[in-house]
Length: 485
Image (tube, rainbow, N blue to C red; front, side, top):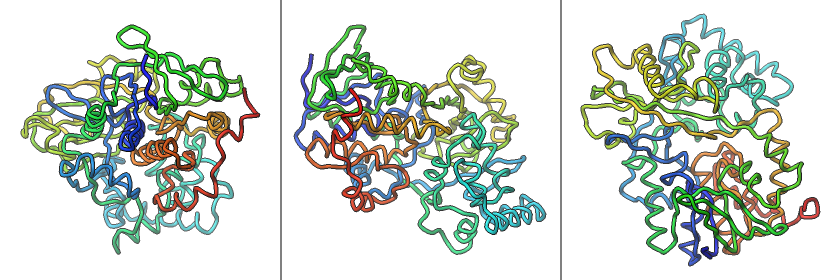
């Protein structure tokens, strides 16, 4: 049994940031991670000298304190990377963000005219409600462009029709964009729209380098990070967490603390509680949905395949959704400059046919699709491959998620010494910088400040906006306690 002042569940960006901020302020912590390495979905995997992300992870933010943390922890080991990506649609590669001249040439005059007319129609006569992603996109881009560049890819990612995905997802991921803005940016230069950034910083050995450095700094200060340590029970007395029981090397280990921070999937957090939360809370937890993900890393005997960092595959003819070219993120991601590593990303759900496909067949499928897309020529040898499966990669914004999440949020906020942070801890499709911000503010809450974590999401571009609004929306700890037991 150990007695740190704060027990942190999950060694992803949110959990490690929280631990690091606490350690800097003289607080002792212990971090519990069920995986064999830190970083969560932002970790870097290694295979025969190749390094690759679980999806590409750009380091770009307008949250100044997060940017300062990156510089403080890695400094000169962060490199500047030019952003280049394209969309594959109908046998053609389009620049992304869309450029009018490029799109006009590749779509043809009549298709382009139809897109513009459809856009004008959406401006003159918009859909009256924007509850789902489909109506949200149509009102900003027009129905023709929605069917051309949004519908197929989005449904490939989420596995459900766009009219069953809440508009919240679009508001977070492509907020502030319109066809008019895209055209204006293309001809007159980029405005301050986060989706259209032209470059980003990136650790030279991949994002895992950042989180591994966090781990090292924590352990140097006497704050352990326990890997291969999975939570099995979270004990509480009323609205106070008393201890976490985990399994480590096949044996139970108990961790007590004054404060608890969790970035594990909030549905699992509630299921592990003892005594169990009320049934309405458990029902909400069971009702949250997730989208899983797998990546097939292909090692190709070729020094240069294409210039993009990543490519979106919108064509329904291919199962792959996105392709990363890790060498174009950092040349140090490959052990030999004459080789290339592609990350073929497939969106799926645990238990479906794609998830259950054997590694050998997945490598074969990915190889066939890379060649079918013309990215790997017949003369180039695909020398090796490996598969990584990632459960609960994306929180799903279906039609019912908001009401279930509100029940969960109300219950979590009753606890006097528990905070949930990060993408899965809050069931929000946050970028890693916003996940780090939740971890940072959770630590400051423990130190004595008051920050409403649930007000942090990808719609907040500036930390200053958060600072101005937090006093207006803060909810006193325990304000909802009379509702539950």
